[in-house]
Image 1 (tube, rainbow, N blue to C red):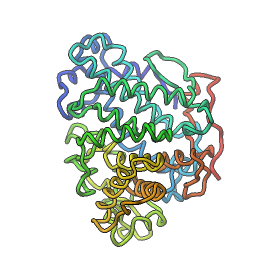
Image 2 (image 1 turned 180 degrees about the vertical axis):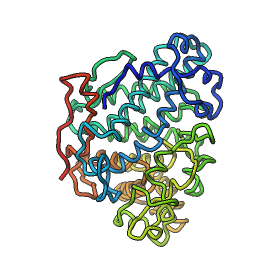
Image 3 (image 1 turned 90 degrees about the vertical axis):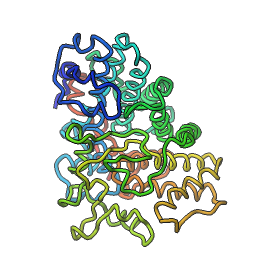
Amino acid sequence: MKINYKNILKSVIVLSVLAGTGTGCKKFLEAPPPESIPKEVALADEAGVKSVMNSAYQIVGGGNMFGGKIQAINEMLADQLEGILFNGDFGEIYGRKTSVFGAYKNDMYQDMYQAIFRANTVLENLDKATTMRDNLEGQAKFIRALSHFELVKLFAQPYGFSSDNSHLGVPLRLNTAINAGVRATVKQVYDLIIEDLKAAEIKLPEVNGGYATKWAAKALLAKVYFQMNDFNNAYAYANQVIESKKFTLDATYSLRFSEAGSAESIFQIISTRGAYEAGGELRTQFRSDISLPTMKFTSAFYASVNTSSDVRKTWFNAVKYPGNIVITKYNSDRFNVPVIHLTEMKLIRAEAAAENNANLDVAIKDVNDILNRAYAGTKSIPSNSSAALIKTNARFEHSIEMAGEGNRISEIKRIGARGENVDKRGSVWNCPGFVLQFPQGEMATNTSFQRNPEGNCF
C-alpha cells in the first residue's frame, strides 16, 4: 500500500453542507458521505473550516481508528486474547512480528495521519474563523495530539526505552505540506503532544456539544503523563478531571457501551442512527451474540474475572461457544464509543498516588469506588492500605476494567519501562515485536526512512 498524501489533500475537504450543522451535540456525526470540492471554496469562511474539523472527527471515530481498529490491534499485541489460530495480518500482529505489508494496520496508520492532516488544515485556516477561532484551534490540536499519541505508542518503543528518549518515534506532521516522512525522537513526539494538549486545554470550553472539551484535553494529558511514568503530572491532571464533578461512574457496566451514552465518558465517539453509527469494527471483531467472533479471550485471563462476586464476569461468555471465551461489551447494534472515561482516570490517579506515596487516602477511595461497583459492595481495601497494596489493586482492576478497549499493551510497555516484565505471554517489554512495522508506503516517500528492527518477541 502506498500512502498518497496528495489524495488525502484532495479528499480532506468535504461538502459545505456540513457547515450548516453548527456545533450542537452529535452534529459532526450527522454528516453525509464526504465528497470533494475545491479547497478554496470549502475553506472560504468559518463554516468551511468547521466542516473540515467535523471531517477530522469522522476519521477519528471511523473503523480504522477508534471505531475499532485501534482497539483490535492493541488487543492482539497484548496478552489477554487467545490468538493461536489467527492468520494473515492478524497472525502477524498477534505473533508480534509485523512487516511493511498488511493492510489492516497500514490502513489504520494512514487514517491516523489523515486525521492529523485535517486538523492541520483547520489550523492553517484559522484566519477564516471569527466566532469560533479559539474553539476550532483547541479541537484541532486535541485531535492532532490524540492521533500522534496513538501512533507513537504503537510504532515506537515506549517512553523510557532510552535514558533521554532519543530513540526513534514517528513522523511529526505539523502542517499540510506533502513531505517525506522523517522520524522524530520519542521525546520530540511527546513534547509536541503535550504542547498541543496544553494549548487545547486553554482554548477549549468546558462544554462543547459533543466535541472535545477542556476536560477531554486534561484527561488526555493525564493519560500521556501516565504513559511517561510522570506520576506527579498524571495525578494532577486526573485529579482535576475527577474533582470537576462533571463525570460520574456508571451505576451498571451496560452503560459504558450503550446508545444512551455513558455518564463517565470524557471524550466519546457519538453514534447517531442512520447517519453515523460508531463502533462498526468493534462489532465486526468482538461482537459475540450473533456468531463466534474473531477476538476470543484466554482462559487464564477469564479466571481472573470469573469469581463468584465479580459482576464483570457478565462481560464474558464461556458457554455459548464451547471451548471459547468471548466478550459481550460490544453486543449491540449501536453504541457510543468512549475513548477516555472516568474509570480510567480513577485508576490512573490511584496508581500515580501510590507511586508518589502521597494522597493515599484519595487513592484508596478511588480503588474502592471501582471495587464497590465490581463486587457489588462485597470487596474493598483497608483504609490504611500501603502504597504497594494500592498499586497492586489499581493495576489488577485496570487490566479487567479496560479489557477489549485496547489499553493492555500500553500498560505492558509502560510498566516495562519501569523495569517490570508483566506480559502474560512471557515477552520482554522492549522486544522488537511489540512495535509495529511502518507501512511500505511511508518508507517509499523517503529512501533513508529508518524502519523498525525486524524480529519478534520469542
